[in-house]
Image 1: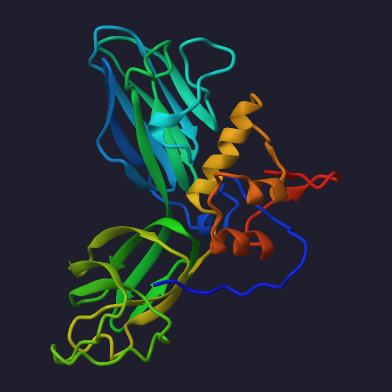
Image 2 (image 1 turned 60 degrees about the vertical axis):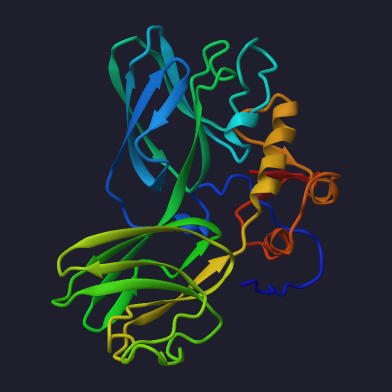
Length: 318
């Protein structure tokens, strides 16, 4: 389902890069630490999971190969296999959006790297000369964390909005009955979803996106979904529960599309800017040949949704 976003005409006032921690979707209570097991060997990077909620992450890295490797975290929207070559170091990839690294990881050893990661797309690489090109890379996603509490008969959220992209709902059942958590993308008001014609006591599920089923009392479940901008209704659809009040609204705000964010990263890499502050000419970006700009991109820019700073010459710093 696609939604129209209306915004006033006028000067472009904002654009974002990699949806850093200042974005609306990152304002969440302190999450628990997530551990990710990483195996390095000739010539691959293997992960125990490729998606985690934003917050503290510990990578437990084991080198099972015969040679020394390293582990580099890059925050970028460029596809994992398409990083440009480094302008300075032959045989290496450009370390766009460098976050942290551990070097070296000796053969037969295990080391750990603790970082705090904001929502967005990442590439994890070994950037020893020739290793990235030979396949030592992996895509990694960090989702906006949303805490949800279910009980008789309500659903409460830690926050009721996120920017578009991966979202991880952490759902805790503090009640005494089994509940479920169903995500619907719909413009229907949260209390006006029609009753099911097939299952007595349940609501219809228009725009069903995903769900976590049968959450036992005292238990916690997680549900990670990639959400488009729009309006959502979150419900428990156990018989009688929706009608008794187990529903809430949720909004996903438009962020820049991955294609546009990747174009920003490539433009900066071509100028030799890999990390730190980056500058973009917004008007040039939105009219560049070969860059597919969506209505959501234009809405995000014109609506001032994405954090920014603007230099005196009109270029954006982020």
